[in-house]
Length: 292
Image (tube, one colour):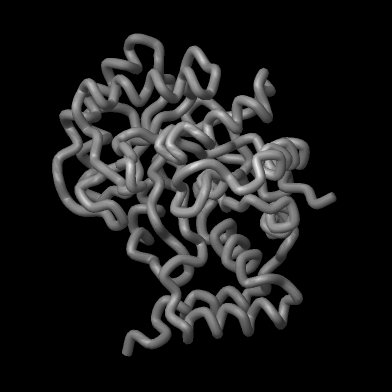
């Protein structure tokens, strides 16, 4: 059985979590909407993740909606003391599966209570405010009003820590001026390295950075280069991408998602993959491939 303990831990607020966690988004149906095709399989993946040492699970009540949180509760409640559940607010799902901003005080308050109820918790360990000025990419805009709402809910004891998701560096600075921010969750990978400076800045201040879509947005040529490196290492492209992220900075926490136990085991095995220095140098060039 692969061990994820060897990649170490990092702070998530007042918690220490292993740097290789699990993202529950793919447990919902197609488009992160509706129930899973195989509910028993989804429950089994969650139990397997925790059995293999995962102590950080990323979720949201707008996955499904409600479904992934309900699956987590069914599979894992009562939760182990060391398990940290991180959720997100700031969006609603339309009846057609569309993603809708939900930044009002009423919507954010309802979202926090929905997460509490569906997860079976009295307090949420970390709540990320998902910026929805643009659904898929960060876009500038003030986060003061919604963060003030979350800060009020934190004072009420419903939230322990606050994070940010899908945000710009400017928004991170604004957020940190309003309340303590314990993590930032953005798209970042070998091919998309726009947050390099932000990652280093957060690392200096002991704040976690949680990249999503470790293989998202690659061009065919970039994917080909990654696949060639993976073949030389007798690994999968995903394993190499995850191993590179683990090496990139000690404050990076990974949340690869899957609805398959086999893929879960493959992802967690990335903790054992050692990248030679020359391989890292080759991987560092992936972002520039095809940009000239």
